[in-house]
Image (cartoon, rainbow, N blue to C red; front, side, top):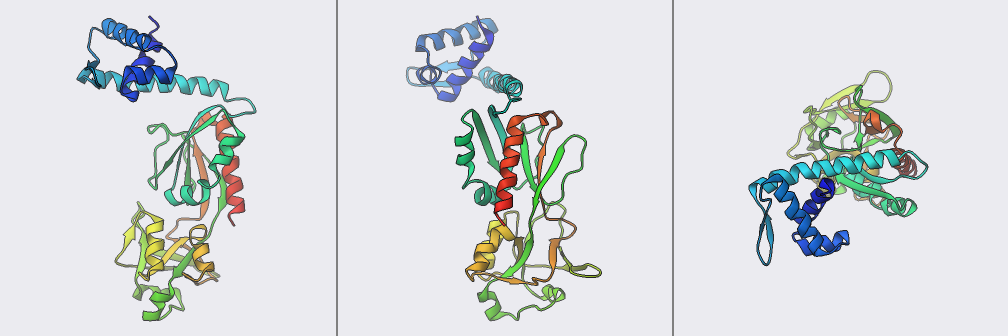
Length: 301
């Protein structure tokens, strides 16, 4: 028995929820899938699947074996892809994690163009505002907005920069005086991003010493678009990326404040960074996707 193939047939059966569906996906006879899963169970001396005339389900032992088998098959596929992914054309699956709104607004409208250009490339794109561990979470490449990570275990490449704008809606200003200096923000409702470091100060730079202003408000979120929508609806003053609010400012839904200043939350800078593991330095998939992102960032301003 080909152990790896039997393992694959078992995994495909679990994920397709049946022998016939798995057979159609793989392109073999149903009897072949059934026979290989039976042989796998016999070799292991354990029942992996509960069978009925209408459905299958994992036994307790089957659930444990499925999770381990899935990891093994993914590792084999990744090893094959890494070996093949050294030429001019990207080959295999690239697992990418990007911030939610950056992914929706900057990447999503163009991702199909990249896939059409490279027919052997597959992309698994996850949207998350959480800082992730590339190795433990099986991610090939992530995008981080803000300070680049300095770490021997991760390669960081800056692909662009953005600005953060302090913005407010006309509705809010109809009921509150417009702040003319950063210090006046302490008496306003500020919509703040929920940073892991708990920063609640906005740092203003113009000339001379930076001005650090403590801000507070009734709404804090780890999703930038929630803050944008709250600002548009008159909920307060928000500090958001230019690429997120420039359309709202252009159309008059938001007004930009303190245009003469560079503004950041605390010491967080405004660079756009691609992170990947050192063993991906020579990966064509990583290089192609990084170049793709760099082009998008350049044209988004």
